[in-house]
Amino acid sequence: MNPSEQVIDTIPPEAFEDEDDIVDAAVQDAVDVPEEYRHWYPDSFMVAILGHRGSGKTTLMARFLLNRLALGYQIYTNLELYPEKAGIHNAPKPLQLDDLLSFELSLQQAAIGIEELGTWVETMRAASTTNILLNKFFQLCIRKKGLEIFFTNQSPRLPGAIWEQIDLKITGQDLFYSPWAREEGNVAKGTTFCYEAEDISGIFTGYPGLTRAFMLRQANQLWNKFNSYQMFNPFQWAQKTQIEGQRKILNVEDGEIYTEGEEDLRDFQKVQKQYNPAVTKVWQNFDSKGVMDFINRHKVLARETDDRAVFKITAWRRAMSGLKGQSRKDVEAEFKGLMALAKEKAISRFTNHNQLIELAKPEHLIGHQIFTEANEQ
Image (cartoon, rainbow, N blue to C red; front, side, top):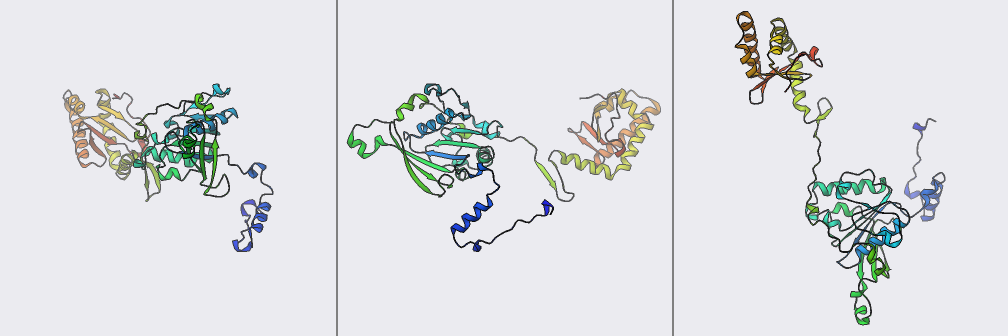
């Protein structure tokens, strides 16, 4: 059987009586699958570390990033880290908001740490271009580019589209502020943190929504390995990102897609095609009466494109004043005819506040330059 004609068997869910049957079927399905797809731990994910100021957010993220640097990971972060103080020779690379918005190609197979994500996005401007692009980066690149993304933020208020990408939510508390620590009176601030981790997507535990607690002890050993007093641009969230690129137009009549800037050109070409005999006659008159030579000699041509020629009205009039006899009559007649055509706006038209006249070229001249001594402007 041709591979393109193969049929994949489908089995209705009711065919499985219990979970064991489903697992057995999955094991059979995995016979020819590479071993890497049997490893349960995710190789790409997004972790949100939330909490009030002083709750150990930055300390925990610094620990995550330093551990990955020690394992040889490529790290990109806006947090100022000092891995050399931990004996780690692998150095992190700086991360800017624009790196994400531009879908920087180097951001792949790496870990990304974003300190204070709220300085980059803003809930009240969820529909801003910056927020939309940032969400698209998370949506498209986390798994496709093999990224581990960690970010901290004081507030859980983030654009909903970003929340949809989060796999693990961690909230922290410094035990120094707990009632029993105050009662003990011998606990130092910033040394012991307690965290709750909620597996939102289920990729860590297999159970979406499962919450587990863990602790970070002797956190004071991390104090000198990152800048906990680093200031971030408070106006970063207000950055307005502008995407440069022409809008596309879909013409449902002929099925063509073209840029918005081509619309006017295409309309003019359609008119030109419709009135091609009239256009041809004008150009034949120019050639037979010596008008083309007159235009070249007196630099009447402003510019020439594949489908049209643009003439300078003032230059044409000034040059005619020096002609005599039949030559002047021929050139004046063609000029008056061209002005009349421009008023009709069919094969010719005024442009640039009536200082120029565009004249379409007949189809047999399209793609050929007909003025060899044109005065380009």
